[in-house]
Image (cartoon, rainbow over all chains, first blue to last red; front, side, top):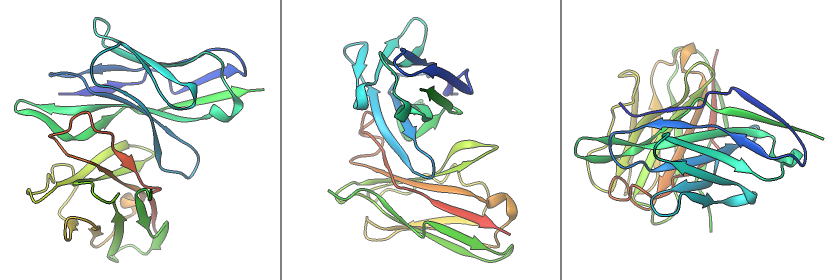
Length: 117
Length: 117
């Protein structure tokens, strides 16, 4: 079965420092990977995705993610964190069945990012 | 352009009552998804519509839950005889294509917060 793991419930960083939010996945077919961010009392906002091609994907708000096939990881990164980056981050993978990709996304449990001034 | 909209934003109901939640997808998107976000279960898939195909109902937790999509656009999620464990945020998303567009981004609405007393 397809799955996504976000091993850290919370990540704390100081403003201006680099940040990493970890994600590992397990999928039978080609991995289609996504990162979303959720601010309090808001829906999910799309940050970036990996479909194919370059392993380093750049997205919104200065975020990027590195796809690593051998480690089955898709960690979210940002060179310099802002206090306004504090939010809940979700990694997701497109579900795959024997006949191909299904419509749904399978989400990790989420990681709360806390950036302190 | 307009994003995904959902109504109501908040719904408080009594145990045993029926509720209807509405989703307006992005115009032209053929695929529509319902997810549920709760503290204990994280983000879980409920149901998925793609064009005129039969919906994927594999995520519906019980037969008290149903959904329809009229005219390939607006969708309504109905919960009959609500229970306290139904309390959650119900999120709707849409994408240009469904399983045929595995790399398509799903865009989420702001959600409906359902509280069952």
